[in-house]
Image (cartoon, rainbow, N blue to C red):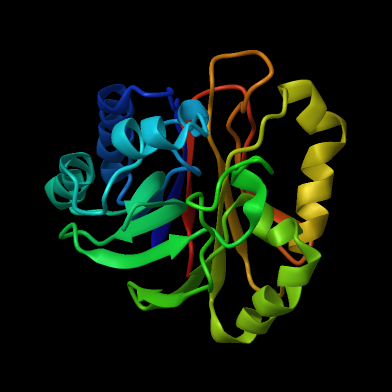
Length: 246
């Protein structure tokens, strides 16, 4: 199967622009015979869309999994006959979660993962900014995967849970939102993330968002396995990395 990691431009509070960006990438990935296209953490609303004013965020930012906006992404998956994974801020029974959703080529949910680690929320956030409780193993196109979002893989207290999934899966999907400049990434952060991936025996598929501001995320996508960099899309520009995962 061919997995495409989409380092796309994600704008805060401009869902239509982000959906349009997704469609352009999906169309291009379809032309390269992709089976699954993965976008970064909170891609749909933009990572900075959350204000931590709960009344505002629950009314104007967070989305239900069956909202019209999510339905639009499901329709794109069906239109291009591609699996699609993307992050969004979820309204789930009035709780707000940093969620990652993967749908299949018919637009049906394959897995919905709610970020377990607290890094998406500020310490002062009220209790309605919630955390997920578990990691999930799921099947797609004959392969078995697990999702971990951004800081999940940096929390040492979660490491045993993640390592415990290693013998159960064929690969890990690691969508993130990392605010590093191109220079900072090259100066050491790239190496730190690559080294972290060595903890796992199975391949790790990493994809970051792209943002406009100088000090915000600059994209980038990688496939790592046991310290080897199997494929790379260096940060600094929009694009996608396609990898034939056999």
